[in-house]
Image (cartoon, rainbow, N blue to C red; front, side, top):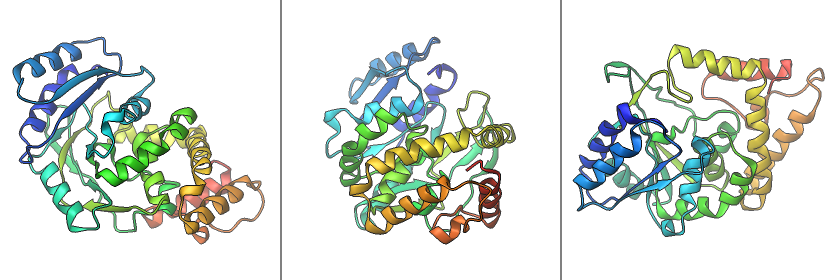
Length: 295
């Protein structure tokens, strides 16, 4: 919502994709600025494109994306999530589709991002993670940026079938839910080292990557917000446990049992359960959080 200063550049970057076979759904979640007017002008200027504007549920970012995913017209569809304030590089869709088809055809594509300030001046690049993108990582870390995701039809249909659990539980982040649910069921992740978009960092980011946003994430841990997110995610995954792989069900239940033990008791490391973050420092942070009872 309230994306008027930036949404025009994002819309034009989608229009400039080298992969031309796309349609665009724009779900406005209650904007009070000129966002809707900007979108309507864009639709009027491009009558040859399949672009639609719909009303979101007004319950936040995750619910907005997931409610849109629930539309029956998306059965068997390719899906690419887009944020209102990014700018896609021209190769984004074409490269994603090509890399998925070079694999099994049932993989989720994600990529690195180029960080910019509000004026699109480059300030950095996202981390090129080296550890596996797997369920044990997804339980405690969201490294699958929603604004980079491209999802093939098999995975789309699976995620749509799992939506009722997530919508009822109010999962905190739609991309984290995708990461957990898809890897839990055995789908693979492609993480492209080549960036696919410019990711603006500004005061309106929900959970960005700047120093200010790092402070917000730290406060979320201190104030038990992170632990609450994990609680809600585990609630959803427990409901979905019949469709998880046998190995991932074991990881899920072992992790849930581990968290239920009093923090003062000796407990094995999360890593011994198959639960990990992408760096050694992250693994150490997990141990500290567990010891403090904040995980």
